[in-house]
Length: 81
Image (tube, helix red, strand yellow):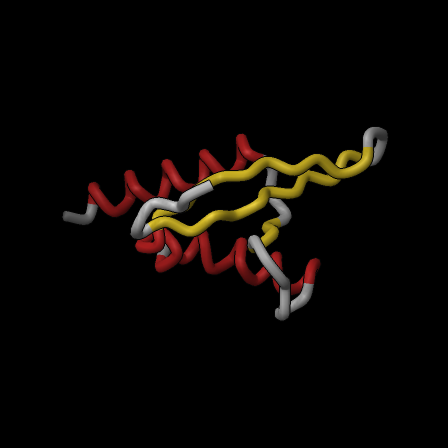
């Protein structure tokens, strides 16, 4: 797949105890990585998967929570303008 300019591919990993881990691929705007909530997710990724991940960056977060984090970050940015 071709990644559009200004975006970064991530793999969201959700650990379901009963079913094992499930993965969802998403594209994130690079500018969204500057948000404090994204920094927290990246720190969690480093703690769980290590700093030197190969290939697509894995983040320990399910898709629903990730969408919520991105939506709230964008709303807070609009509110401060």
